[in-house]
Image (cartoon, rainbow, N blue to C red; front, side, top):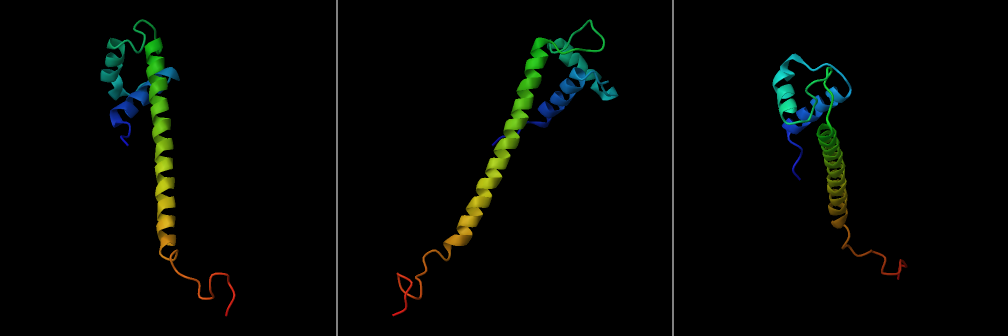
Length: 105
């Protein structure tokens, strides 16, 4: 499973900050210009607002993060279940000491 790249997580964080009308950090000036150039945020409105494309990208990245999280949980559960099965297999082939029906002869 390929996890979401750190760059996409950083982009999602900036898009969410813009959507929530939170101020961008001082190091975000380059990404701000890239968002404007790519049509993800408005050019003429302060504070910045997401365009339709920005909203869709934000939703897409949020879904990706949620899907990655869910997939990780499923993988962890399967690995835990496999470990439990492997732990129980060692005694699965043993024959009961008191016969097949549980009575001593």
